[in-house]
Image (cartoon, rainbow, N blue to C red; front, top):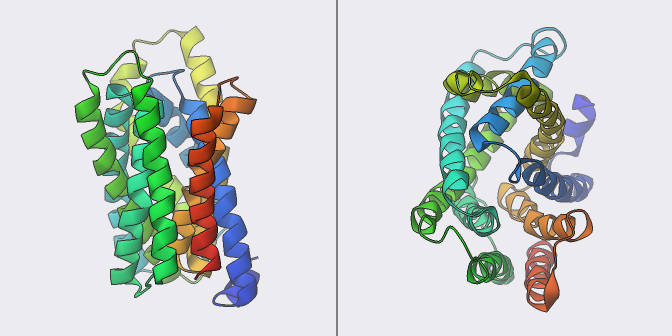
Length: 299
């Protein structure tokens, strides 16, 4: 598998596969958000997911994939710090603001910052038509946030600081996407990076939230851990897909296409959760999808 992926890097076939992986990551990221939506304390939800994927990744990291090269350990340390800050900001965002408002803000700021960072780190540059597509995509995402805010009936008082945290979280999304793309390109075997990333990344939140677990009853812990186990497998394929896409093709394009997750999130809300979409949200979703098509077609 690793040899096959390496053979596709920088090829038209690799570009097509990266496109499919980015869209898969978008769908799974929306599913990941739905799993966290309003069911448990965001800190504990994240801890359950992280503990699950860290424990599952351990035997693969230690006994299956090739051992990391010496230069990878400082890279893993940097990834650990960046993701720790991201998770703290994300939890602070979700505990202060309505999910349907702050989630689009996080996802809307992320691709803009990532495209700018990819230009500096990887010398990738969007063409004018792609910038127009990015403007349409991010405009549609922010439009969803504004529309959901206008319909919000409770929690407005805490929304201003929540939006500040949401923008900061979006910046960290760009930081970890760019940094992790550098990391997965720095090792010979991409699955070495993924296995060790999940093992190390699964440590932080379970450790810092250990006191919160003491207040839960056994009946409360069981469904939380079940959700965490499901979330772990979704995270494997979501994060793994976007990381492989950034190795195969351009980081900025892959990261931007991932943010069509807001469209998938709305569709999941409509088809699974019974939420109403309506003409305004439908139009904004079409704008997001159209922007993604422009970025891909005009590249």
